[in-house]
Length: 182
Image (cartoon, rainbow, N blue to C red):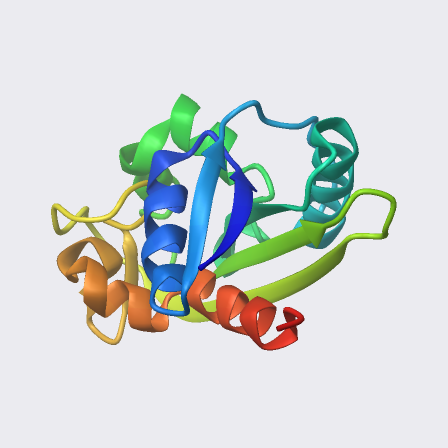
């Protein structure tokens, strides 16, 4: 079984990615030391920088994940600041921001960055288009899952298995796995 170090302090991301990649005979090992995050409007440069920085610091091949929720009516906010916004104001206040909005379209985006020491990072992007619900629904998942609706159900209303078949992270990890040298 191939082993890859996943640098993340987010246990939800780690659990999700570990489950998805285990089916592909890859064992993820969590390193929660973190990495400095660039302040950018897009996730790709953040994941690329984080993977390169962590690979050089740890001197091993690493994977990182930078994800965000991009809401149309809020001009893409919270986007790359999703973790910060979720920790500071939470889902209820995001819903409050959306109270008078008719356009509830949103995109969940995950960017996997992978890097080996001495090489350049590569990134793989996965997206899922959905809507912001009118209230929190469901008890599963983490982060924005209770307010991100996909085909009538929030991610938090799905089982882990259902979500892991179609999530933004799954789509990015599938691209990463296709690229990964055998």
